[in-house]
Length: 138
Image (cartoon, rainbow, N blue to C red; front, side, top):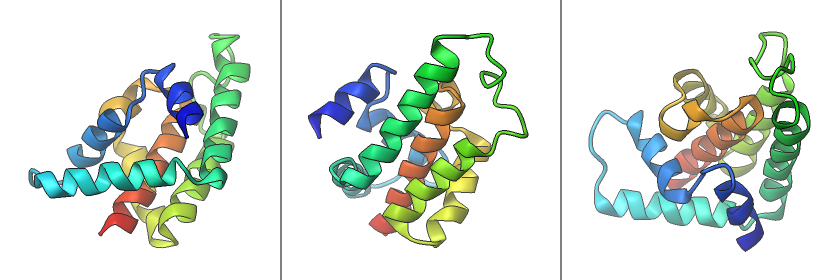
């Protein structure tokens, strides 16, 4: 689990920032127990090998298609690019089931917090992680 945390940290992504992003789309201030529950759920999801493989795929795509070539056609997240959405949806549903797909769409469209700073593959992967954990935590 430490490896995926390190890989995400290299992009400035922490569990605390993911929780902040998750709760930016919630109409009321979450209780401390809700914040703790979400952090635990994210950490549990990041210990799931299937989730980490999908996130690693997003990292590799980000590195290969965008970081190495910032002028790549993928850097602007073109409308025809669906692989990033599919990756995010897969992560969301793996963690939270079919309902998480709807929550994923909400986070993907609003891009709260750290999501707004990430490239097209990582923002959708992290939106999927948040969505799945939000659905499964409550």
